[in-house]
Image 1 (tube, rainbow, N blue to C red):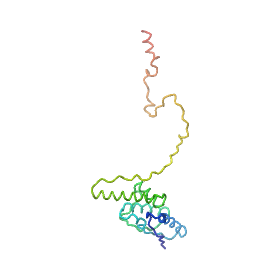
Image 2: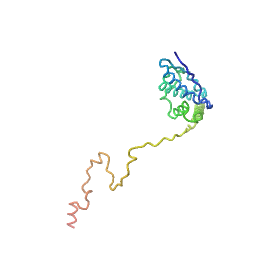
Image 3: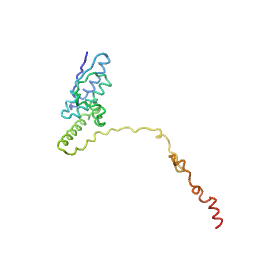
Image 4: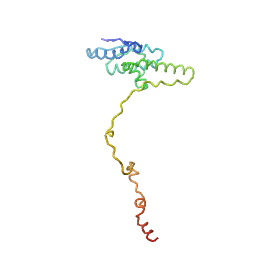
Length: 196
C-alpha cells in the first residue's frame, strides 16, 4: 500500500500555504507511526511551483525537503527529476538556511527571503548570458546567535606582577647568558671595579 499525502506548493505569498511543506513531513511521520509497513510517496516538484524558471532554487528546496522528509519522517518514494537533483551537501549554507526557513515556515519573512534570492539567481543567469559580471549577492537575514560560554569566562582576572612565562619549548629550554642574570654583581665585573 502506497500513500501520497499530496505535496502542495509553498512560497506563494498566501499565509495558508506557508505550512504545506512541514505539514507533509508531519503527516508522513504520523502515517508511518500508525501504519509502519506502508510506503509514502510524493511528487516533489509541486513544492516549488512558485519559483519556476530558476532550477537552482527549485532543486535546493527539493533537496532540503527530501532530506528532512526521508531522514526524519520515513518518506519512501519521491517523484523527482533525477537529472537535476541536488544533494543537501551541495547547497550553499546561506541557501540551505533560506530553504529550511521556507520549508518549515520558521520565520514570517521566509517567502520574501526566497524571492530575493530567486531574483539574484535570475540576475546571475542573465549576466552569464550577456557575458557580464554577476550582481552583488543579497546579504540575507542576520540571525542573532547567542555567544558561546567557556570555562574561562567565570575565572576572575588575577593581577600579573611578572611577565608571562614563555609557552614554546624553545623559549622554556633556553639557557640565558649569565651576564644577563646579574649584570652588576657578576665576579668579573666586581674584579674590574676593584682594579679601577
